[in-house]
Length: 559
Image (tube, rainbow, N blue to C red; front, side, top):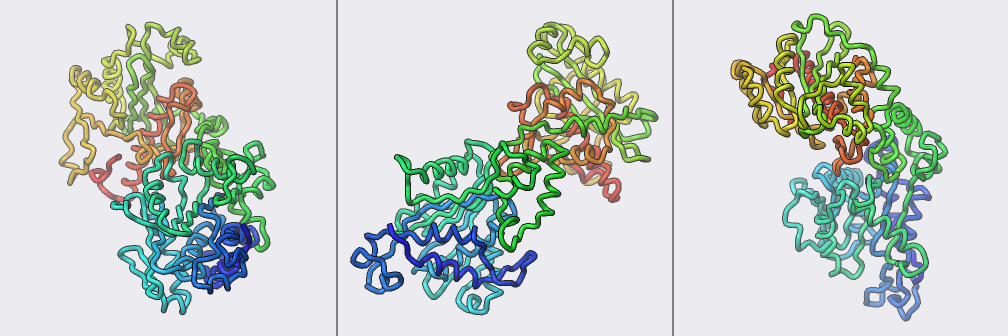
């Protein structure tokens, strides 16, 4: 294995491109030293046996009528924290293979991402670079509807792909750049399908450019772990794989700027292009909100860490500990959250309404558990259920399981005392509760999942029950709304002990698309109160937003 000057030609080409956006918009793309290292390590090493007469003489090797100077590296992984310039480099690499020094005849080049919008970012960046370069504009054809860029001079084509695209079998990429592979989670289907077609090429190259995934089972995590082993001399050593891994060690202080250097080279290199103030702001938020700390560690320190931290810090929760104001409850719109859970566990019902004068959201929760076996459940859950029952914070129902008739009666009583607009519920066992409500004369109706009536007149009388999904798509905005109110100290919960316990137990989990939901597996105890809190807040905040905008309630729904 020897070194050629292919790397320098690639570096020089990329530096002829112009930056289309950001603080250096319109300036030539100047690679910093930490960026150049990747190109030297990936494009410079060639197999000595592939050179003319066993000796590399640079460009002249390729003038002897055969493919020579064959590149050694076939897979390169670049993992760095967010906002360190990954997208411009992906765009430059693809253009370098499409029309630059690495271009060959009739090749297929693909940049792949999990979602269509993410895939379009690289394509758009490439298009902007082309339009800013008169020569490239004359030599390349942009096909907007297909997200393709075609080079008539050599017959090669670039295309942006996402996992939603059908018909990926049969593709034969000479260059494949996987953009933010972390978003694919543990699903290898799309990734493996694209890789299968690379074998038909003499010098296939896979670039994986991504911030770290949250857990060990993700495809990206497996690739990083394998690549790190491949760099060490020994049985796993593989010269065809290179990894450029910038991350802050987990045992480092995440709030010390010195710790940020390891994962954010763009902020600490010569002529930095990542504003240190941006990192400082993210760190301040993370210090106050543990769930934000997990996100900060993952995205800004490039650590493999999920959101196992407490969802809400005790400091933030206590800052919202003022007792709820329940005066004039019939004059305010109250929204409920309901989590029935299993019949031998904790059931939670919670209502909230906004104070029109101060903007605070008052919280009024109710909890149930089965009376029989309560002490055993207290030992199992490490919670003082008996004390809470005796002090009136937890209601028990006779028998081994929760009797939903008690829950139905509490809801009926609440409707007498509060102007209960609707209850958002987890779909589990809702039909059983609906029967109990009807048995005591409470007319109720469950809104269909696609509920969107044409007018208020289409809403039938009675108690409205609205399904609230528990997946990332529905829970992420609900969690975010609640966090925002807590950070602004706009919630009054009175430190209800059962609710406080549930919130302290709650953990969030980030899915492949970056959205979050509560993770019951990693949570340390019951979280039913936290679930009902965010559902009720979601309904109340959306309702308040719609009322402020003057839009009718009939157009509001929860996914």
